[in-house]
Length: 328
Image (cartoon, rainbow, N blue to C red; front, top):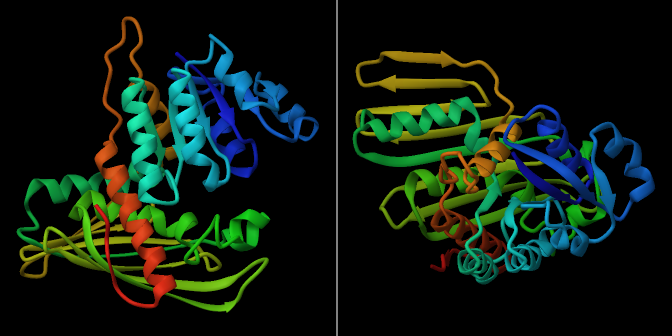
């Protein structure tokens, strides 16, 4: 069992805690760090967590092996580095960082201090995406030519915080909340991006924004793709990979559609899993522990970096209003 400290106990931090506390045999939270001690005390007590208002308290505790970061995006890079230098394994909510330079610094710090780095891309653990990757890897699609995606949710209406609409913390419309998941899926399927063009169409800004972001990507592999994201419309998820022999489509958490040459269609629906619990347990299983087999975290750091490279390219394209080359 990995003892972890949860840094940040807002809406999403509470979701992380609820997913594993008293439910997982791989990871438990022994400490929560929050600026809102009194408001969080009852929640923490119910889950058997101590509370502190200081990251340093978590980093100094010998019984804390890992930290889980659920803090504003601009804090990710520095807190990853602080935790790594304290010898703590790090799980960081998406996006890993807000730019590629910081991502490289964070990844290097974890490598230099021999700690595991995990990133919170829970859609990787949806049954539909697990099956999609399996189908892509099998080769039945033939030569992959194109990828498409869309992710919408209602979070700008349901879960508002000032920092979530700050251009510095949440750039390019819904990129940090929704689009980053499609970015991760595309990089995993098609590899590093080469060029990107993106545009945000905003009807209104500020609290409860109304905007849509569209992205066109050319990958180094020769594959092309596009996706869109909206943060104020009913939830919808789609990732579709097109090959010259077949295509495979992930629809929301559980459904996969495979379309073959000749018109045959195969539709599969899987039972729901707790993807948040799954990602945290995968992180715990990557941490060396006496008597247990270690399993590498399923998102390699090379893909984390490529994801942030494309992420940064999208932001740059929106700001410059033109296509841009993606850094490597």
